[in-house]
Length: 221
Ligand SMILES: [Ca+2]
Ligand SMILES: [Ca+2]
Image (cartoon, rainbow, N blue to C red; front, side, top):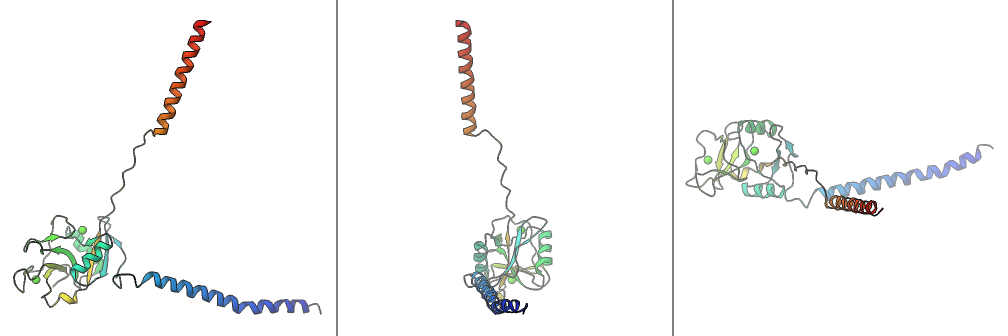
């Protein structure tokens, strides 16, 4: 008899368990659907193959992206606040191969589209280093036929020039993009604000008036 109330109390609890489980499942599915809608269809390109990776030697950020032709890759880089990578020196070249691999062709930001034979970085940085594969750049299919560079041709890191007429052109769909390290914002020099100046002026005026009055009083006394 003593246990009857406990048995009767336990019934509603058992009845609630499935509904709590359904509630949790519904919340989980809702969160999952929100995550999916945030991730996907609005992006211009399907997959970023890496997240931003910092090169410890210069502080710049790099990412391997899937983006198609050279120009499309630069457009995508710009949309991410960057450019196709500028390879400034052998150390950076070596880091790129170590980080992203040396066995697959990736677009880099080197082009002679503006003036054939004059290779320039799309980032506008000066040319301080080149790493062409043997015999490259060669405009293999005729004058000005290959105006855009990729790396990892013939051996890890080495550069090659390609153009739309090159058979390899459409098979290259990935690029390395580079974002320069953010320049540190200068620390503001501590100074006196206009409110501080007004307070100081008020204090000085008050002190002056107080001295004037006390001097006048002592003379009169
Ligand atoms: Ca660079
Ligand atoms: Ca070539």
